[in-house]
Amino acid sequence: MTPLRFIQYLLLGAVALFLLLFLVGPVYTVVEVGLDWQLLREVFRSYIYVEGLWNSFLIALVTTGMVFVISLPLALLYDRYEFPLKNWCSLLMMLPMILPPFVGALGFQQILGHYGVVNTLLVRMGFPAVDFLGGEGRFWSVCLIEALHLYPILYLNLVTALGNVDPALNEAGRNLGAGWWMRFTRITLPLLKPGILAGGSIVLVWSFTELGTPLMFGYNRTTAVQIFNGIMELETNPVPYALVVVMLFFAAVMYLAGKFALGGNAANSSVKGSAGSSALPLAGWRRFLPTAAFLLVSFLAALPHIALVLTAFTMRWYGTVLPEGFTLLHFENALSNKVVVPSIINSLRYALLAMLFAVAAGVLTALAAVRWKLRGSALADLLAMLPLAVPGIVIAFGFLGMSVKYRWAAEYFNPVENPMWLLAVAYAVRRLPYVVRSVSAGLEQTPEELENAARNCGAGPWRVLRKITLPLVLANVIVGALFAFSFSMLEVSDSLILAQKAQYYPITRAIYELSQILGSGAYIACAFGVWAMLFLAATLAAAGAMLGRKIGSIFRL
Image (cartoon, rainbow, N blue to C red; front, side):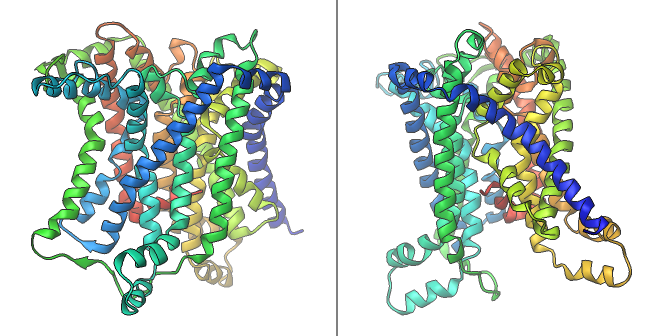
């Protein structure tokens, strides 16, 4: 083995050790304690736990169905037609991702609450008020806000998949007399299967394990919320470990089913021809219909954000369609609150460390798999992608279990004393897939001839890496870093579970605690949420400008 190869394997080994300690380790800790047949029997004998599991399944299925109904028509319109403001409409599709759904739930309560906007309009029109946030209405509200947050993931995958479909296939079908519906079901839809499965699997697992939205709506009969509520009893009640194992099992089944189905169909995609864009111009008033469809969906998706902003600035919004009076008092109260400014500083510190960890591990993983082609690199790549299938609440719960079980973990990763390193590593592991996929896509699209030419001119391997390879994929590295940093700033599950002292709260935990204050708490939390929303909006705009429609590749299995 040459010295160069030895160093490459050494770097890959460091990444593997990182993943084993901070991804496999937490999962193993949970499984070791929770994989007890007596505890598992207790979970499935309890009506409350079974109901929570069933509700989580229903939320996942309904949310994924809603996401599909929203995303597929818009992706087809975007790919097939030219229409006014097309590029702006594509950018608007990213709008729901600028705010975690649990923060958007604060704004949604002003829209769907008993004295919210919708019920106020219904009463004024002579209809009775509807309890959207109680009983069955609460279930549908949770599904709706999650669908309005997650549909960009499937939409971006579908747009990317449609970009790989050769338009000549549809033309051939048309020439043979096939109608639109037959061409769609026999040609387009089968070729979209990789995009549907890639995006749909993420949406299904994400909504199945979502903690923040049901928690904010008070929908406590879901598995994720039951696990969160059981944290305080870990030392006396090990049942939450078993609940985590059950959630992990079903999430893994969903993920592997998607991977298996995707593997059998990924090779069926045809590469789009190079004759230019196949999008057709529409004539007359019809050319505005796609724009109207995009704007309508964008408006519905933006409603939680609009309500959040209005709530942050309003003096009173109770039983009226629009707020009554505007003020900056809530922003002043937010800044003067003892947890707000420290939480911003904490989140910046945690997210910066997480970004450095994720970029280092992600770049090395991508290089090992795509360029160096080392033995074992495929396994490292698979491990790096597992956080998309392993719920965040499982990883967070596993870290909590490690800090209780292992002395070394309690010393360096104690969530009570100072969770800085614990949260930084947890954030990094959760966002590692975005870095790996972004950098891998850049390496796959960059021809190796340029690197070979540099080697032929006498440049050493590290000089080639530093002067040729990394500069060519710098945009992809930056986009991965942006996603790792910004989503770490607004991570929900890890923050709610691992940050237990007020002085160490990150932003999302601070928003949750503020929202629980009676009276003005919701208004202060909304004011704080506005800052978070603006921050993530700037990040996603920068990432979209760098990658364009290729940004969908980041949200793929």
